[in-house]
Picture 1: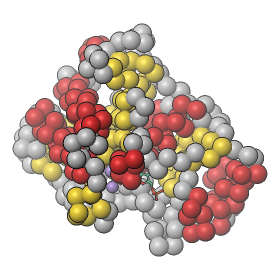
Picture 2: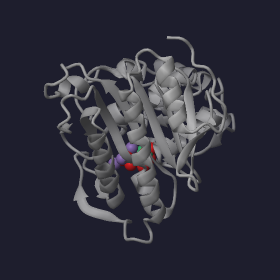
Picture 3: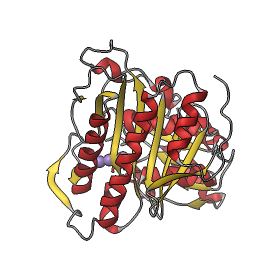
Picture 4: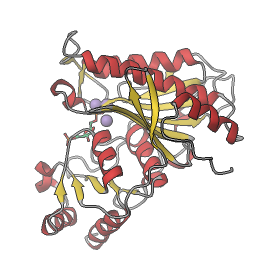
Length: 332
Ligand code: AHG
Ligand code: MN
Ligand code: MN
Ligand code: MN
């Protein structure tokens, strides 16, 4: 495809999407509409997040999700909102979500796309006004249009993503996404109710000064990862860990850094989920010049086998990730 003409900062997301649609032959208009549906759901979650403390949306649901995690009210609300927006839009035939065990059939069997989503990322930060997010990944279905979608539609692998993105509900709300070309960020202007292009063609620094890891777990990590973290300290890098993957990723993407979620003996695959956390962020990361790997391979090369499978994750500036792999591979 021809490279996109740069659109100026200040362009609305709608105009941007429309413009891309005409530039790329593959964009039939349905993907454009789907991206708009996600943006709409993002605005709704923005609203809920912002008033959560006022309308009793904080706290737990008192039940666990399929991951064995205590669901927060906003986890459930975000899940419902996204499901509704993607179902009403009509372009999506099936969804998988962190909060639901199986495939969600939208009933739109004519829809060409499937979506994997982490509706609310950073649950532990919801009730304390700390940044949280949404992560999404879009595939073109492989089962024939008109039939009922199946597991196969979600087992395509990271390289087959047609678009991936996240929304960060931070000091401002920002939507960052890529359709496989450049990575662009759109800040939400509340007064206009529009996402506005604020971060065109994001390129991450090749090296960085920040490392992000839950160091409270350091004794549980394998020796090479411990050695790498000690090395970060020796170099007096800056430690930054919010505990919301989206927020930690976004900061490191812009400033240069590495994010680590290593395995432990009791959790040999780490914590983060491949389909709706690691694949989408790895897709964005690689388009912005970063690397995303586990102990043995690039995240996008991992073969998917189940909806909620997990993987260790090392993600960030290429120089830092390469240095980490030297440590990890020496230790193998
Ligand atoms: P989620 O809130 O979607 O379940 O994801 C939680 C993840 C991720 O956002 C974060 O980086 C990580 O859990 C934090 O885990 P620790 O508390 O173990 O550091
Ligand atoms: Mn969760
Ligand atoms: Mn998450
Ligand atoms: Mn989540």
